Image (cartoon, rainbow over all chains, first blue to last red; front, side, top):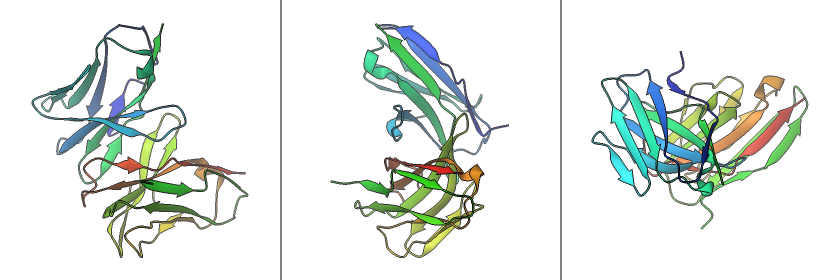
Length: 107
Length: 114
C-alpha cells in the first residue's frame, strides 16, 4: 500500500464548478500536510499547508481528519487557470508525495 | 532571484554511462533533496541533506550518490545508468532544516537511459 494515496482522476469540470479532492495517508505519526500544484511539465509549487482546524485561502479550502487519516482540498468557483495536477504531501521523517489528481476546467 | 537551479534540462544516456545532475540554490537553505517522478508514482525521495557535509538516503537511493560540500550545491550522481532510471528528476530545497516545510523545486531534468 502506498503511503499517500490519491484518486488520479482526471476530473473534468466546467468553469464555476466546485470540485473536491481527497487524499489518504497510512502513517498515523505524520505531522505536516500540504497541497502542491503541478502544471504540465513544470515543477511542483506549494498551494497551501493543511492545518488541523482546517484553513482557507481564497477559493481553496483544506481540511485534515487525523482520526480517519485523510486530507481534502475543495476548490470553489473553478477557473480555467486551476487546470493542473494537485499533489497531496504528508510529512513524517521526510516528505511523501501522492501521485496526484489531475483537474481540467473547461469553458 | 534564481532560487533552485538544475542542469541539464534534458539528457540522454546509454546504459552503463555515468553522469552528474547539478543543483544549486541561492537562498541559503540548509535542507536540499532529490526526487524522481514517474507516471502514476508521484515524487519519490532519492537522497537528502540537512546541511553541508551531511547526507542521507531517501526512499529509492540505489544507483545514486550525492555529496554536499557547500550549502549551495547538491549534485546527484548516476554511477552506471540503467533504463529503470529513465525519469524526471527534481531538486528541492527548504529553509527548515528538517525539510518539513515549504519545498522550493528546480525546473527538473528529463533523463532518458537507452
